[in-house]
Each structure stands twice: as C-alpha cells, then as structure tokens.
Amino acid sequence: MQKEYKTITKITGPLVFVEEVEGIKYEELVEITLANGEARLGKVLEAHKGMALVQMFESTQGVSTEGSKARFLGKTLELGVSEDMLGRVFSGFGRPIDDGPEIIAEKKLDVNGNPINPWSREFPNDFIQTGISTIDCLNTLVRGQKLPIFSGAGLPHSRIAAQIARQAKVRNTGEEKKEEKFAVVFGTMGVTFEEAQYFINEFEKTGAIEHSVLFINTADNPVVERIAVPRMASTAAEYLAFEKGYQVTVILTDMTNYAEALREVSAARKEIPGRRGYPGYLYTDLSTIYERAGRIKGKEGSITQIPILTMPEDDITHPIPDLTGYITEGQIVLSRELHAKGVYPPVNVLPSLSRLAPIGRKRTREDHEGLFSQLYASYARGKDVRELAVILGESALSDIDKLYLKFADEFEDQFIRQGENEDRDIEKTFEISWKLLSKLPKEELKRVKPEHIEKYMPKS
Image 1: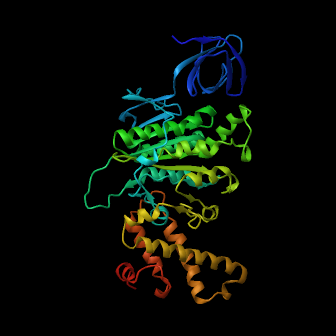
Image 2: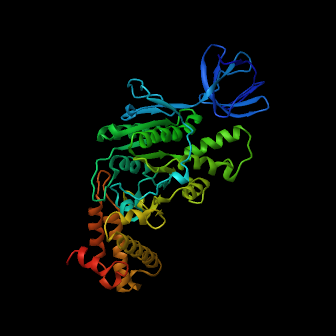
Image 3: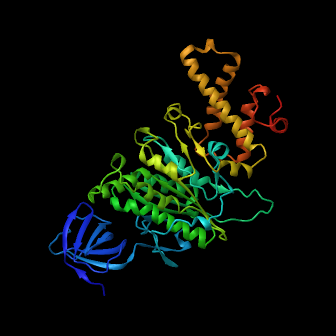
C-alpha cells in the first residue's frame, strides 16, 4: 500500500508541489485525490531533498493545499499494447475514444522508451513509395528514416499527412518478393476538433484505419497530454515494428504545438528560458522522440517517422524547425507561393532535402539518380529565369532562357501538382519526368546518361 501525503504546499498552473516525501523517482506516476474524493493523475518532474514537483495530466482546478492528498504509485506512465490496437482511435493518454471495447493488453510498456542504440541500428536502405512525385523522385523516403514536413499556418499539411498515411507502402525492389505487414501510427497534438475529425473520417472512408493506430489530442485537451502523444505513438510503433514485424510509418502533427506545451510547462517551473522562450533542453527533448525511429539489426520491422510542424511566421530558422533539421535526415518544405497558385501538394522543391535519398534512388531504377539531378538543376535555372523576367521583361530573355521558363511552369503544373487522391507509382513519376525533360534540347541534358536518354525519353 502506497503512502499518502497531505503535504501539498503549492499549486502553479499544471504543477503541484508536494513536500516531506521519501523514495520518490523521476517520471513516477502520482495520484492526487481531491477533497471530494475525485482522483487525478500526474507524474514526477523533479524529486529533490524531500520535495516532489508533480506535473498534472489534467486540470489542477479543485486541487488545494487543504484536503487534497498525493499518492505515489511506484511506476511510470505505461501503454497497454496488442495487435488489437490496429483500427482503433485513442486519446493522448492511450484511452480508447472510438466507442470500441477496451484493449486486452498483451503487455504494458513504459512510454518513455529509449532511443535506438547506434551500434544496433541497421542502415536504412529500402525505398518507401508515398505516391507523391516530389517526395518519391526528388526527396526519396527510405525505410527507417526521419523526414519531417516543414509547413506554415494555412498550408495543407493535414491533407498531405492523410494522403501519405493512405498511400505509403514499402516497395520490395529485390528479386525475392515477400509479403510485408504495413502499419501507420498517427498522432495529433493540439489540433482543432474539425481537424481531428477530418483525420478520423479520412482513415475510415479509405479503409486505411484497418492498419492504423490513431492518438488524438485536440486543442481543448490538457496541455500535458500533448507531451505524452509522441511518446504513446512511438511506444505503439516500437511494439508493432520490433515485436510483431510490421513496417511502421509514424506521422506526428503538429510538433510546434508539442514544443509550445513544453514551453508552457517550463515557464510554470520558472526555468531559465532559451531561444524565443523555449526551454534550453528543447533539442534534447526532441531527440528523445525522433531517435526512436529506425531499424534494428536482426528485427524484421522498422519505424519510419514523418513529423509535421508549422513554422511560426514561415521562419525556417525558428528554433523548432532549426533543431528538428539537425536531428532528422532532411526536410520537406511547403511553399506559400505554390499554394497561392492552387498547386497541391505545394512542395518547395529547392530547399527540400532527403539526406538518405541517394540510397533510396539506388533501390528504384537505374536512371533515377541522373533524373533527379537534371530535374532539380533545370527547375532551379527556370526559377532564376522567372525572377530575371520580372526585372527585365520576357522580351530580354534568350531562346534557351524562354525554354527553361516554360519548363519551370510545366514542372509545377504537371510534376509538382497532383490530385489529393492521385496515388502515382514511381514508374508514372519517371514517365512524367522524362516527358518534361524532352521539351529541353538534348545538349542541355548534361546530368543524365546518354544511354538513359535513348532508353527512356519519349521519341518525338
């Protein structure tokens, strides 16, 4: 029987201070009982010299220094896991919210987990097809990678996330074809009710929910629950990937709301703030989430992570995207300019990057590497010409410049633009790519091999 303490001395925002405690551990669960008998959960943030700082998972309204009691449970926050989680919707604390039955857990896992030991990591090398040309061809995603999407307020990152969740599949490019189990773990943090309902409806409508696990935290849920969501999602993914052999894609949106929740709790703790008021340990905290993705030697499954964040004021140097970029292997950047033109998905090709793309391109088709390089260079030149035309006028452009300008326009309209329900396989993407490059003179195609031009370029 755990000891009860009536020594609550202070309540500040989501934090409760309990004094004269013994044998308390970091991250230990705490049950706070109010004077009316209602019980609420929290966890230990600090334990020092007989004083425990407790972060509540629910509102502290009604908690008082007189009449409220604290009981330390001797365990950390856990998630009950089993394959029955697939097809279900949970709250940020792992409770079913879809009117389905309670999950009969095969086991309970500590949600804090551990980053994968670098020595035991297996290098990511298998191409994942998302059905989105700008990702599959130019920013190739591979199994076990962490590839975030940098968005902005009002941009359609939710639609892109739902599309990736519906369409993503591991393409086996080896000679030996084998059936693989695929799952999506989807976590939302601080989204509106409408946005949360959109995700649920999309998954149900397309049947994707059958191989998905959803953790939903909306803006009206407790701030502290937001901090739990990515850890719940990662724990479910680790179980499915490393114990059940699934190829898991984890999508987390919106990591900006997660960082804001961290900042709010940090301010309540009166910690010395870092850049823009975020806690100095933001980098470390984010890494404990991102580094749980990957592959482990000897394990069939893998975890591929796609965190989504909205850049405040579209500032890519803001601490959240800045630190995320250091930890992850690249970024997909969305463009407000393309969105204003009605292009979906509005992927800004030039600043986007996948550091593991060269590995993925080797697993697709022989011409992929040269095709990527030629498309990127040609579009970059076309964008430069477009800026020049604004200053000098189109009449001042040379004939070749006009061709590149036309290429840039058609690239945005035919390659970047695609329907929200259009699932392009990689061969279709290559077909569009070669068709676009065929509009340029062959002497300009210096980044693709002549034999590939002969083999794949459509004959005029």
